[in-house]
Picture 1 (cartoon, rainbow, N blue to C red):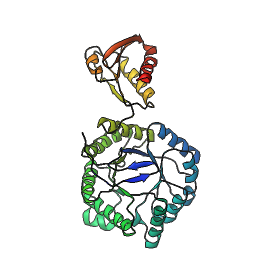
Picture 2: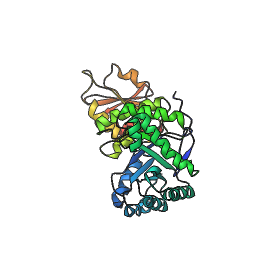
Picture 3: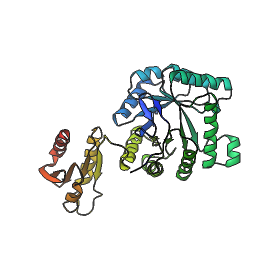
Picture 4: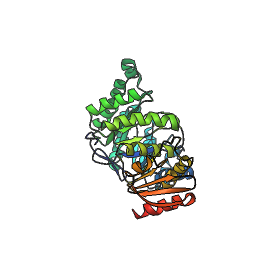
Length: 349
């Protein structure tokens, strides 16, 4: 069993973040908030697949002015991602966002930083200090290079600014596209502060390559107990980010309440029906919120034994499917009726 690193606690909307709470899944919209309709639809779609917190880039004051309208139509917390302009941060807070991603050191005037911190304090919303390995301050990069230590020094600089104003409602991220640098940076910061950590591999790539890189990097950190909220950063549909994040958490036993889906890798013994059936069933079950295991096995050789560990298991053949419940064969139905029968069984579990 994984023992998580002890952290302080923050609250983003109605989601608590910290070592005493479940690891939350985050994603990011691909639309400017000005596009209210598409922003809302995308967030609602993300909600359906298990996104806990959503972040949106806010590039202008005009963009920030639409955040309140978006927030009224969604159920999950909304975080504004802001760089450099303190006025955008103040407007986002005024519009009722649940959190900011803002590096205070990027705002040159101390009084402007203080005004943002005061507004965040007044609304009791957290600020995430987010360090990107490719965007370090010049003096830090000159001294440390693009290294994990440089990322940590940058984070500590921004944190110290917030702390100087008595602000401690903080979470931290230190992401690079390089897995090793990212993991090392999180290991280092975990020893220096007790703030919650938002983890991920930034610019990880397409759903295939990025999914692998994220599973390796995020998985390593989670296995060591590091990480309180995660985002899988993919070049693609944010829906894939949430599904991949959920799969990573479930594989480590860190997420319940959603179906764990197990399927056979296939071989020469497996029916040709296995691959299309497994794909279809996984898609059908993606919205079911039950803490159970469903398996699709390829043949009667290993299938029955593997099925013993599943609440519901299916061995599809050319014309029909064998259905197991808790390892016991309970039915054999025609292929076109298998999914309907599986859903009936799950509904009664």
